[in-house]
Image (cartoon, rainbow, N blue to C red):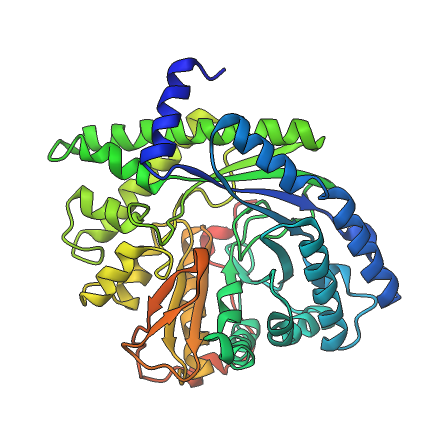
Length: 454
């Protein structure tokens, strides 16, 4: 049980240190909505989502009010749509109709985003998978709340390079389709390796086929709380530093556990996982980069950054797993450039490059996230970036992802405004040398030798 002392501490974290519950995400299985008639499938999807999630937003608001803890987002994750639409979708346009249905249902129940316009193609693509992937640019352009993800590799299967090559083209096409809004569609599209089944965070959220019919997952954030705690141990030893991060992560996770239990009980659905991820926002004082600087770096990106981030990520997870028996998802530190003012400052100071960010992704929770790049970046270069990140994930048995935004009409040094939690970003330079001959090879990169553990 959470005692009165913990309640007082929590109030302080909320009022002064930017603590929030980032999201309550309801997972809804749509496997029973599959069929051969597109109109019927769309109707089933709409009816199931609007029935299951009709009280999600109001319940989240009630819990936030009663506990005094902000719950920033209420979201939905669904079964990867390439599975649901396999029998009824014969063209990319058919999948776009499902996307419109999902968008309509999300607006009806009042959630911020719905994730799961997705395909899992880590070893190969079915015709349905390919149709969905080719529909993504148009789907992103004609909807507002849909998030899309494609898993192109895993430690067990290797990397599907045919999918990697295609996704480079799809990212560019999505940028073109949404160029009137600074290529915003790409901010809702992520390419993953080792995607978890239970991730409540967008844009990579979907409900895995091993999950129940409906489930409640909660994502907690608190970089401001961690930074505030570290200010009191400035100059202390690594042992003190680690203990402070661990204890703070424990307290943050306890808040998420309470919210998750309440949401599960009131909505009548099983509780899945707490995802304790230090996910920044554009707000001042809510930055992972600021934590790294508090640890002792002049700017994120300076020598020592990867070590500091590895330390932070590990201690966050150690604190989290002691606070809840069901820590899952991605749990750790996110480093999205556009959503973190400290990261933006480091880029503008010339300290942080894409290459250094790639090194940091070896030890953080996800990967190259919310990075604006020049609009004339070739599709093959984007595929090369995806391949590099997938290789890091595959070899290190961790989730990695790429969410880059080739902003049509923008060049290095320009600034792009995405708005809301997506923030703003300086356009970063990309290596100009070609990898086209590499990504144009057909087939897949085999699984690494240490994947054979049976």
